[in-house]
Image 1 (cartoon, rainbow, N blue to C red):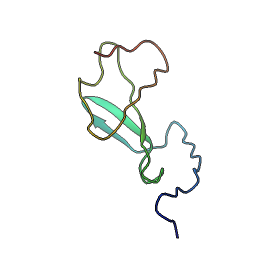
Image 2 (cartoon, helix red, strand yellow):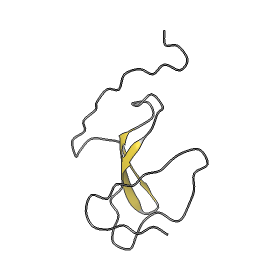
Image 3 (cartoon, helix red, strand yellow):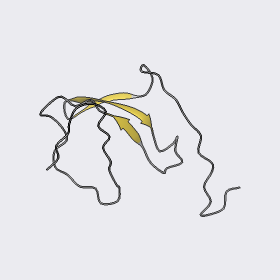
Image 4 (cartoon, rainbow, N blue to C red):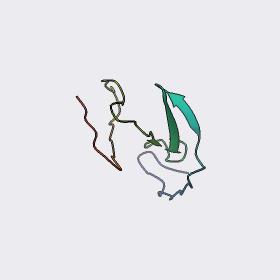
Length: 78
């Protein structure tokens, strides 16, 4: 039994380019790399290829932090 405040150990999960749940949002494809179920509710990670001049609209999250990792090119946020 897990006690309140204790976290279970992290388990690495590796996906190939064909794996991961996919869906469309705001005109682009999203691939879930790790969801709350896989991370014990600690985080989620997803991949969103962004075309030049495109990207998410200005927004904010009340209870979550959001990070962007740019693999290739540059990304401008306002």
